[in-house]
Image: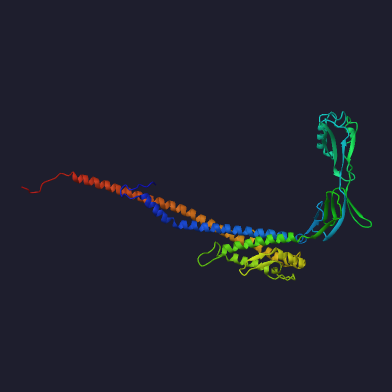
Length: 437
C-alpha cells in the first residue's frame, strides 16, 4: 500500500516508516554479520584443509622405497649420457666408445632435376624425382626416408636412408625402382651398430643396434653420440640431493600449514583471530610438531633434530637441507629409519605425520572436514532465518504503511468535517437579544 505523506498531519510518513524499519532490521542485520564471520571461517577451514592435503601429497612421494633408493649417474664425457633407476648398483663403469650406430644410406649416382621422371615402370612409374621422394616418405612399410639433395645448381641426387640403425639396417627401396637412373645407387653409409669396450688383456666388447645401451649394468642405460678419444667413466651414486630437495619441499609446506594455524588461532589482550576458539586446531598443531620431534625408536638417531629438522623456542619448525645431507652421508640407514620404513607397522616421522593429516583431512570423518561441514550447516540455518525475517519485515513494513495511511486518511476526513461544520456555523442567521427594546 502506498503511503500518503502529510495529507493531514504534515508528517513525512515515508521517512518515519523507514526509521521504524531500520530498527526492526537490527536482528536480521546481526544475523548477516554472523553469517559473514561464519563464511570466513568456512573458507579458512577449506584453505587449511588444502594446505594439509598438500603436505600429505608430498608425504606420499616420500613414503616409498624408490624415493629413498634413488640413484644418479654422471659421465666423465659430455658425449656419453647416462640414466639410472633405483635398481642400479652404486659404483663405476669405465669403457671406450669405439663406434656409434649408423643407418644404411645410399644416393643415386645419376643427378636429376626435381621435375625429371625417374621411372617408367614399377611403383614409381611416371613420377618425378620430387613425387617419388614424397611417395617413399609416405609409405611406412618401407622403413625408409628419402630426401632430394641439391649437389649443384638445379642438380639433385635422391638420398635414401633406413630408419633403423644396426648391422641389419637396409634401405627398403631397390635401385631397379628408378629404371631411368641407370647408374644405380652409391653407398653413403653401411648399417652398423654402436660398440663400446672395456679395456684389458682381452677387451670386453659390448654392441647395440642403436646408440643406447640398455641395462649395460642393471638399472643403468648409456647413450653415446660419437667415438671417444679416451676412457669414459660413468659413476652411479645415491641421489641425496634429490631426496633432500623433496624433504625440503615437504617441510616447507608443513611449516606453511602450521603458520596458517597460528594465524587463525592466535589471540592477545585486544583481539582474537578468526578461529581462536577452535581448540581442535591448536591440538592439531601440537600433534604435528610431536609427530616430527618425538623419538623414533627404530633409528639410532632417535629424533629428527639430529637430521636437520629444528624446533625454535617459539615452537616454529625449520629444515636445514645441508645438515640433512651431512647426517645422511654420515649414516644413511639411520636417517632412512628415522623417516621411512617399508614395514607399515613401524612408526616413523613420515608415518606419524601421515596419520595426523589423514585424521584432519579425511573427507567424511576428518576433523577439518567435519568442522567445515558444521560451519556450513550453521550458514544454511542463518540463511533460513534471514529469509524468514524478510517475510516478517515485509509484513511489518506493510502494516506500518497501512496504519499511517489510515491515520492520515481519517485525520483528513475529520478535518474536512470540521471545516464543513465551521462553515455551517458561520452561515447561521444572526438574531438580536430576546426582549430587546
